[in-house]
Length: 105
Image 1: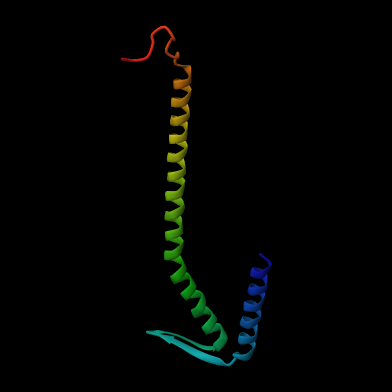
Image 2: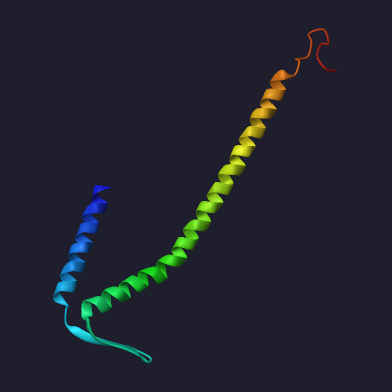
């Protein structure tokens, strides 16, 4: 877990240095939309964030499906374990064959 914090701190430091070194104002144009004097680092970081969202959403859906399937499988396993336990209890309650009957022919 500590390694994760170190990696996150290093990534945050790299992003901060990038933003400080790329503060040059630039203009952004898309179709009819235009913004002037936006810091270059802001444009790049916004594009990075948009890419993470676009890539992360399908992955989040996949993880949600896996968790749903896992919950369903756990419920089925619990139901089967209960059925087996009930069957075992029913078998233990049955009377054993009496010694007078002898072995089966």
